[in-house]
Length: 486
Ligand SMILES: Nc1ncnc2c1ncn2[C@@H]1O[C@H](COP(=O)(O)OP(=O)(O)OP(=O)(O)O)[C@@H](O)[C@H]1O
Ligand SMILES: [Zn+2]
Image (cartoon, rainbow, N blue to C red; front, top):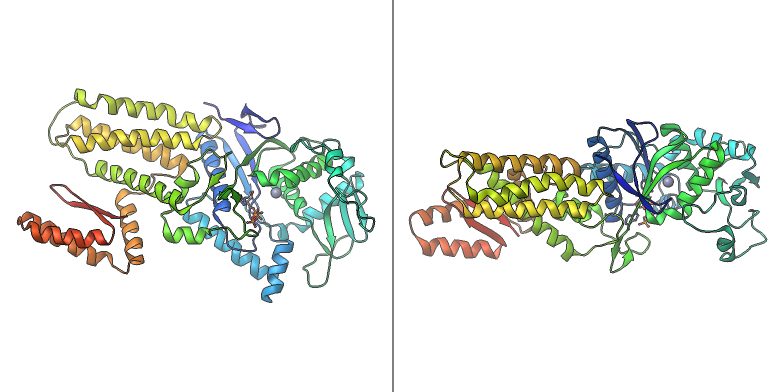
């Protein structure tokens, strides 16, 4: 079994071959910690989380770095605006982000280095670039000289001449070429600074990723990822810095995901069209958010709207309802598989074959989810149609449950929660929003259950109507009333 993945460098889907198997090195550009994270940041973390899980499932030993940018103009502006020390800002939002990612079931990367803790490595790398003639000092700043690096533009497919035609030349600039970018910026009043051979100052944005990936993962890394907004200039500049300094290939596979959009525009803080991860976690189960984010191919844009995520929630409730019934299923008679289970059996073996296959072919989470829901549909119909299950039929249902939990739960982080726990926390959360407690509602449901046993249908119906007003959906079986809040 082999992973095939789209490589932005070649613009093709390629077989994934790590440089030194079984080791795989992966670096993903993380957040700039100056504000609360939004759904776009969660998409990035979850896509690479799925890739991380798949690589581990393929028995690779993955070293995964996701950095935190904690030196940046936006951080400094925010700190000055709030009258706080820059570190207060970055620590607050880093912690918030890490807690949210944990709630979303995102596995911790091997390393989460911060730019501010790697100034020494950054300075050494800049010195190397200056010594190699690829960077120059100008009034306390250091710039990378883009025309000195032959391959500049190879990732984004841009040519230097084309790029130059689009920029305004300002003769007062400290740069020799308007496309040169800052590796080091001299300190301005009110900004954090560090000591360097070029005076007090701070690193530019791009150099931190080159320095930290070199430190933790070595000169050549297998995978480098981020949103496609980072292809140019960020990743182009990272290549120039890293390859300029080492003379080696920096990245074997560049993987870029599409953006979360709102009515077609990138979700971003500067446009003010964002929903925070915290807000979504208040409203939706973490697995609903994951399922929504994985419902489209990672390279496509994904348009957020409340309606779209609510549709995912409906599908997830149905999935969990099915898993709930399987959990509860017990045989009513001894016996083997009857002809009626033929299509379920086929659906299960199809799922086992196709689910992982979809993920291995360029991480097609949308298709994998399609396979999951196809099996779920078969399971749902089977459970609802046949109440006199045989021992072997129950075994088949439990096997399907186990496969779903292992494959979808393990690789997508979806369907990994115990179904009872899923509904319990969902009911609590939704009732709280309606000003009700779980106890109150459970008492009503019990009362209705008893009324039905006593054939007091008038009372049972009036309770049902009352519950429906709260958006509660009820489903009666002989043993219990299954319910959830819409
Ligand atoms: N709308 C989005 N959809 C998907 N990924 C995004 C989106 N916005 C940012 N990202 C990704 O999140 C990661 C962290 O990015 P970063 O903190 O630099 O965000 P940003 O682009 O500055 O966000 P904003 O513009 O909202 O401030 C990057 O890999 C980036 O590509
Ligand atoms: Zn980066």
